[in-house]
Image (tube, rainbow, N blue to C red):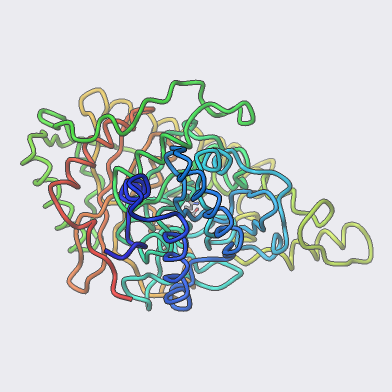
Length: 484
Ligand code: GLN
């Protein structure tokens, strides 16, 4: 196998047995990038020099017998997580030259385990989008069909993992931004429970929904990375002071008698027929492994997209108020302070970000607050209760990750509502704060990947991993690679 196609676990084993070296592996990944990045455009910034230096250090440590889970493993980071001394742009003109003076907690944790930073991946500006077309620095393409989008907003990370331009990556997920691109690129993406992973150093979009998680080539790697990035952090008051289990310890356990909820609201009119068929077959496969499918109802699902686009935009309007041209980032000159603010924000933000700031400001303004923001918060509680009720009878819930496979570039850019509907199956999970994974479960007739979503209870990523791993071991969708 090509070195760039190795999983974390395979690369770890090979390095530990001295079959390959961190430098060799890192060079193989950069060679791959040289060959395919022109086509895929997954990265905003590549950190080759820095990576090779880290790889040499990892090599001497490995030679000296040092053992760390990520020692010498090349990983890509979505460009909305701060990396000290390395540009972090959020794919926005307003942060085009922003070099963070500090490190995010997640990347600090990866550093402590010896990872090699390959580069920062492209995203929809400030993580607002589902196609990675809302980037100020060009569109990322789907490695399975370069006329199509990779999903978003973590499209750069998902495409990079799928194309072998890194061994694994981190993404962030506010309404589906890890799971939807993972599904559309044929890789594994996990959104942890809200509070499982520190958001310190993640550039905020909607703080009550944002969560960082792994995008990987298989379920084992996902569990390994989650082990490393999880845990309470005094720098993030919303991170939970809850013990982190070893998520890999449940891999390989049987799923006999596990109750799998299948919500009827997730098999809707208008969803792609091939997606529906693949997901139904996947459910039968899971059943054949001994699990028991149970039809359930999540009755408030139909309100999730509306609720999300009120709450997420409201939080965004507040979070993005800080980009004013004064402290950091892009600044336009103006005749006075107000004029400078206005020109900076008008020139620095792209169209989708402005649309959201306007929507969110409106929803929070006096006279509308009660009708929109407050009402949306109330319905959010109902959505959360739907899950609590369902989890009284089932262990996990399975659904399609996305209603369609990857769509054509440009197909939905003129119609924001169509774009928003791409996340119809992922958004409720963020509103409820529960964890969910997307794993490959098939391909369409034109060879586009399809994703299966498995949702768990709060802080029960273990059941998700157990079910996902059992399914993955019984199938080989995750082994297919795009031809580039
Ligand atoms: N596509 C959704 C949005 O545009 C979700 C994005 C995300 O999860 N960051 O808001």
